Image (cartoon, rainbow, N blue to C red; front, top):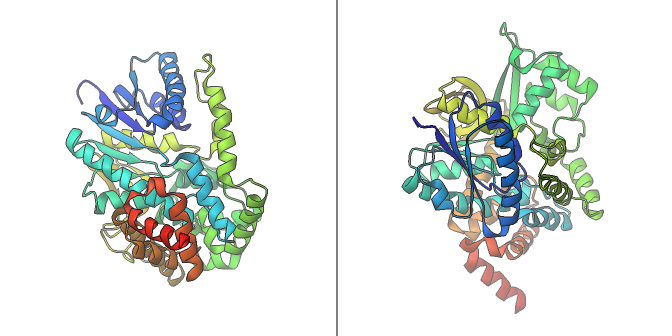
Length: 448
């Protein structure tokens, strides 16, 4: 690392890349970057060139001598890398549209990381990430994988469990947004408060303390129910049920709405589906607009419209993680990492999303402690669902996939779950080689 570090971004043609580059530029005095490699696949070549040219303009405009390389050759890029970031979507946005629209056609929630859609995103993504891990073991065994591809928590666990690779950190922008919005409610800055998160990716709770150690979680609840401000732009802001949250004694993640307010969230999603306005379809329009902006050779900074894409503050998570590990900052971040006792209601070896001290040796999770029955029961169910989803993604075991569908709280168990699973397997078959035998069997039965 003496001559500067090499960072590889897989999914480099993503619309998020300008924010990532902005984050690196912001930390130019902390991270001695030598090379940034943006990698994509043949189908993403045009986007890679557009966003790559913008990245080069941004680096040049900042007066930096970093080399920015664009390539479709992943192995060439990975050789001797120090950090690898992942932000890709297998099947691109058309696959996400299917993840949302097919379940909704059954009257079942379709969402990018939750329910049937989230499980199928895992089925498509985990095998590709494990391929990348095998290449990293050969070409850059000392590199860290910083993953932002969803479902981030399940991918982290797959890497730890099936990839036998410990140098992985899973990221999400949602905790950052919660910290920012809740600090605003109190008229403070995030650094003026202590946040303690515990749970799973897109399924965590948190408590808040002031700098004297006094818990102020209930003070934030008071303001939350009084003002009902939007937290994450792409999640419908339906108010939580106050009595339920008060009983929990913790602040929920905005994604908990899909579980705690399932009926209202489903009704809203079906209305959007009927208008052809699922989140995936909206994002596709936003992306089209963004790439038109990115083509402007005079553009040398991240455009404001990127905030509509849903990944705000992503760079603060990804770039800060790299800086924290490289510089052994020992600051606290919320990441997906191995549990190691932080949540005693779950096994030590599973991945959890918790507040962690970031060191040169990676995240060191902070103990959150035991949960009350309401949170504990849900958490253990969701972790079992994740474990089954990961098993199915790795092995192609149809039974494991059906079990995951059966215990997922957003999918009705029984024949509807099986019909939905079968239809989605066929719809995504180009990206599910591990399920080839099962898909052939389903298609044969369908045509007989």
